[in-house]
Length: 503
Picture 1: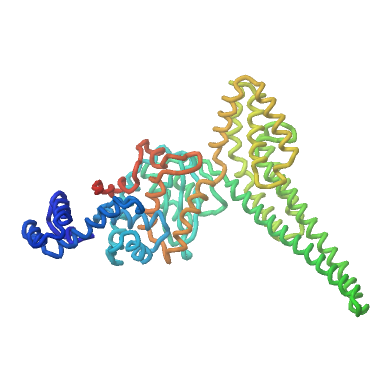
Picture 2: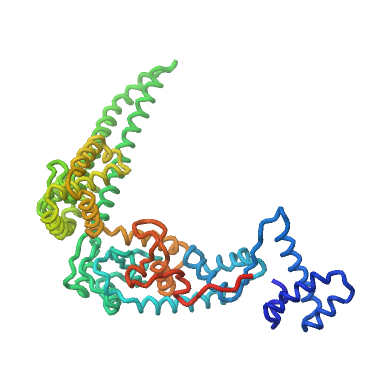
């Protein structure tokens, strides 16, 4: 940036001065004459000539890429600072270090950057408080922690809109009632809430939305079962490794030139106990795996073995049976999962009441056979797409091919399949949407030594206004889906439009 930026000359006059300085280069007295004519100093003329010369040389040189000069004004700097803060995971000091890299020769102080962020956080808070939330009917709520303090959040399951994000010092029922009550004042009137087993969440939802149906999170149930399964699997592999290592040690000693019978004998006696423990660990893992697969299938509305739709009562019975098997295993982790599944069984299958009603209504219109086949195809498709080799079994693949062949022969198969798929998307039984939000916020919490409500307001605004690049909502913003108002630039929506002037 030359000294021209600090003058009062209009852009056209700056261009004319730079062009004259280059054109009259080498003429005696040209610099002084231009300085007098444009009322600037000689160093300013020389600096303008040098900058113009470099730009022209770069533009016309064959071996140099085209250079685009962009004017950097306070508006552009503010946009850059906000983007670095909330799009990237940067502290204020990191932003201080990055600005001179992005804009050579420029830099801002810590206080200046902090003041910019505070203003933006205030604007974001006003924006967030002004959104009409009346279109949101189903939500997932959850809590995560920053430096020991809970952050309470709520996400619309249909649009992914983050309608609540509050930093609190506790997470009891009163805290959740305050957070949800503020959203309720903006028009939020939830009919369905998906949650985990936290008592504070249940109390807060009941206080603010007493008529809302509270469903237990199937995602969390899958998670705790998978976590316990990994522990038992690692123990089984550890026992196998111990057995193999001991057998190798015995073989090495027995075949050595100086084999000591008194050394090998106790090892062989010990081997029997190691083998017994190995069998026990493997049997424990296998039994828990079978119970886990039974529980996972139990919360699905389609019974693939019988080819029929389950009732919520049948689903709950199957969940309790699987939990009873887990409870009978001699392991703390298995029994802990069993207790959770027993307590949460009614809530895990609550979603099936509404879904079964919707499927029955669709069957009355289109026919029970085509609807049943569509449900089966979608369930089998999710299995064969799974990362687990057990679920991608040849039996499931063959069953999928057979079900798909039968479905194609039914009238309006494509339309029914699309309708059932839409019902599956809106069955509202898992908190996957809020887990995606947690994954987006967590890196910021790692970078920041402590989270503030101001930053959460700015993060929430960006999360809702940004255009999503993948998923079923690709190319849209959550704000547009909830309000019907399209968003082209999230910063401009917050009052930071892009600079129009590009030289």
